[in-house]
Length: 383
Image (tube, rainbow, N blue to C red; front, side, top):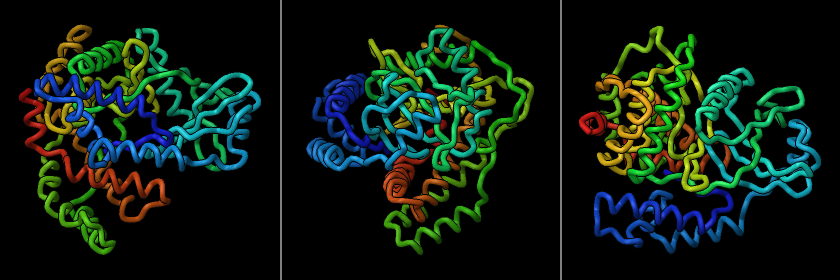
């Protein structure tokens, strides 16, 4: 489920609704703008468009305020110059809150990162990003600190900074065939780089919780009085059925892949070009695994979109050779979804703070309302 930015823009939301209308009319020609607005509101966990507008007003009136001195410390850590305005909030993500910084040298976006995203991991992402930009993929410019690092610790958190760029909103699913085709072309461009990687696939994409851990999680949800505990119990058989979708994740043919190119990590730039904003999860995969995973991100919600899948494939074929996909090709996608769902539900049961509580509660409802299932994966494969 999508979370509104800290200071949401009705202009962006109207554009998202119009883009969504294009996608809806590709499958249901009679769809109206009101249908798209209502669908978009639902993506943000709200009942209708007027409720969404009211939430926009509330968030803008009650936007978070940066901790005293944080902007100055970030500017100093990354050599950005002297701050000239207070930091302004941008959005909250699972990694934390991002802030817009203004200094006498320009404007910047500062984002927190997970602890496992070390300077070394960031360099891996930078290697793929730099090669991708040379090949024509749009991406923001990362800032290095005076020490030459992409990640710096400020107030016991890892941070990175990008040069500020003016972009539009991120795509909303279902995406139009035009967007899906661009996404397919972007993946083919990245895979054509074929940068070899000898590291194993990230454990997050290969290691799964035990059946007992999921049943214990259900007990914890009940003990916490979560209203969706019964829904979690009803979903468990389907969750555990996914465990039979597995594949050999070792081998000599790994290349560097973005590993996290999904709607929330892409923005629409000039002339609606796609700007890939996230590279820190770059790691070893095969084109087969990444394509299968990406299809679950771009064409699975709110239901399997066969037109988008066809356009994605056509875009990929413009630049590369489509790999053969089987049900076990979705092994990485399954593991990633299982771990995301499990961790999100854990966070919703016992959140670290109010920001994470709101995000996790919404996301827990989202993964239970629209779970990954064998049937959905088979439908994607058939398409």
